[in-house]
Image (cartoon, rainbow, N blue to C red; front, side, top):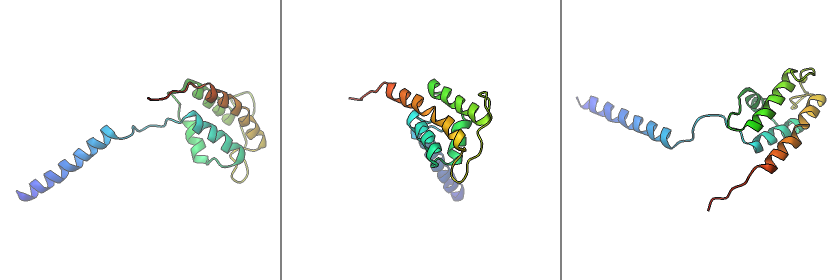
Length: 125
């Protein structure tokens, strides 16, 4: 009987910790910000973006920001060749795309920078 009580109390503690973590923890999900997307685009240009981060950005819809989702869709079209051109070719070394692909990605940087600059700011008082 004493083993049952010990196992029950340990299990109860673990379950309480799980519930507390779920209530107060950060929600699971991929929610990239516009600044993060800009960092990825610039990283594609200079070879600092990791392939995994780029694939994650292209692979998951950005449902919380319609303008960023439109840019993501343009990048997917560029990546897969659905924009009327050929698919972007693989780059050498740390580069995700070749020079032509990086130039096509670079055309979206000013669009994203304008979105970031036009984004309304707020301050909590």
